Length: 219
Image 1: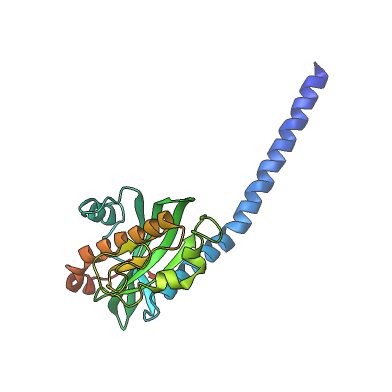
Image 2: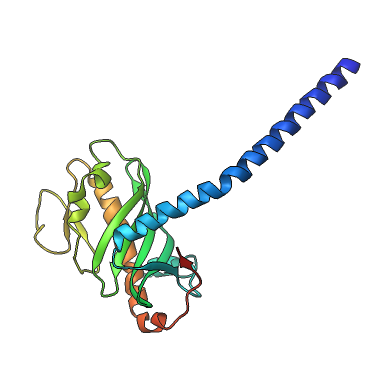
């Protein structure tokens, strides 16, 4: 019996020390990890909206009550897409555009997360892919081959449409699919369309938003 109690005490002591050490490691690494995540986020914002001097959350706006509701009212089925963040790009104290972060849930290899920049006049200004698990050499080209998303650059449309074999690709709203990766192509472009839908909703109240103070400025 004494041996059982002794072994139990030793096990408890080991568990307690391990817990304390894990807690200490978490406290030490928490801030650096948060800073690194924030840095990656800022780089993504800047990549899709180079004109902005800073990026600010919009006062009184919540993704849950705002962007999600906007998508629900759209003509396209965005049930597989999630808007996780919307920030305003600011220059000279004016909104020059929006950066919308989307998680496209219908990729071939799972979720694809990316940030989309849309200028104040509705012009697409870029996409920065944050995480993707598509097939190497195929769907992964959505991130590694700049010519795919490059087709959208500078276009001002309310919605893009994926086409195959270059059919009708001269039109501003047409996007050639990645060869052999139509599923990935459609998932990414539908996510971009989700961001454009959010922008369209915002654009109708842009003068009002221009007058709002912002919650906080990202540095």
